[in-house]
Amino acid sequence: MAWSGFIGTMTASAEVSKRAVVTGASSGIGAATVRRLRAEGWDVLGVARRADRLAALAEETGADVLAADLTSPEDVARLAEHVAATGGVRSVLNIAGGAIGVDRVEHGAPEIWARMYEINVLSTLRVTQALLPLLRAGGGGDVVVVTSTAGHDTYPGGGGYVAAKHAERTIANTLRLELVGEPIRVIEIAPGMVHTEEFSLNRLHGDHGAAASVYAGVDAPLVAEDVADAIVWAITRPSHVNVDSMILRPRAQASNTVIARRI
Image (tube, rainbow, N blue to C red):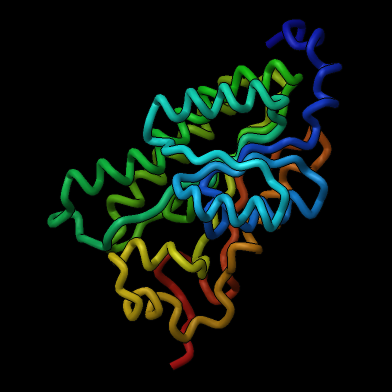
């Protein structure tokens, strides 16, 4: 595909060369990514639903923040308006998402599956669609989709989340094909077991004991900062280098189901 439609905008890229939008910024990988980018001198807009957590993150890091529900088309439109009004964007980091429950397929509630599809797949779709014109206007940049090793394989009790993450991964893979020739990189980061304060707790309906058991006996599961490091590394490669897909796991995890645990 021709580059001619973008030559006229390339000079604008310097203005947004270090400006990122980070979804899921109120906790976990999203918050860690905001901190890492700010430490490296990026201008960052952190987006999440919880205004109180965002306010604390803004005070800590100096990041710009916006409270928004990414399952709401109106909120996503408001996000795009805010980004356009405050200087554009160089990197769109789709980190928001999550799992709900560990039901087997035969017992899976369709409304729970639909909710996981909404928060993982459609939120990524909406944000990417809304901000892609702003990436183009700034001369190009990155679309990052943080999926999961659940998007590359499956495991018992993971059907709904696995289905959503496979779909989210397909957004990245398809978008990369569709944008070939444009100065926009599409990057998938797929973490395995990451011990954050909320992922398993939310998945297991607030059961602290069950959430702790997910990581019991595992020698050094990943933490949010490990994934943030991978994300920032990928988007700071030379502009001609596209990290199509990066899978990262703790050394103790060989697959979604093979995990070394100390007894």
